[in-house]
Image (tube, rainbow, N blue to C red; front, side, top):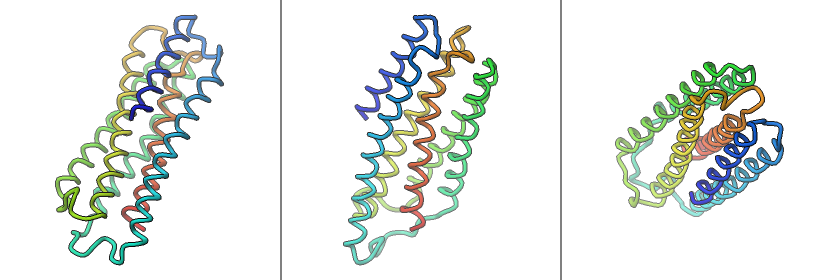
Amino acid sequence: MQGTIDTSNAAIQAEHGAGTHGGHHGDHPDHRIFGIIMFLVAESMIFLGLFAAYLTFRSVTPDWPPEGTPEMELLLPGVNTIILISSSFVMNRGNAAIKKNDVKGLRFWFGLTALMGAVFLVGQLYEYFHTGFGLADNIFTSTFYVLTGFHGLHVTFGLLLILAVLWKSLKAGHYSSESHFGPEAAELYWHFVDVVWIVLFTILYLF
């Protein structure tokens, strides 16, 4: 998470810098977006390593999940998946709004996205309390909590980014059709979190 925090600070500073110099999105838009994309590529490598470890453990374990592991329910994580994927489309509406100078629209759609993200996290916590297995029960349960927990941390950080955008949007003129790097960066990060969850859900619950 240190890389996440460092890059977040860089993103916030970049945004602050843009605002200091007039808040024009067109000053160095490609550099800032490129930086966010490179950060997400680095984060992808971490998740790819975790997925590779999970698949390796699975391939060398005769019974998967190991005998005695309670069967996982699909309903709650399935609903959670729908909520998280839908939230990406909702957030996109917020960015579309600010590109039309509609700050109220940005607040509404980002606020709704934040609510959906919070519901996802609550659902995940509820699942943790009802899985019927613990972190150290066997190799499957350990990888389950590591993968979902690490993803949950990223959802939490994405939620904080969204809340930061909402807070900054309260300042008159901070975001506009020409200055919307913060919402764009938050949306890119949120899409990344969604894509990772789709892969995680597929290999952990369905495959």
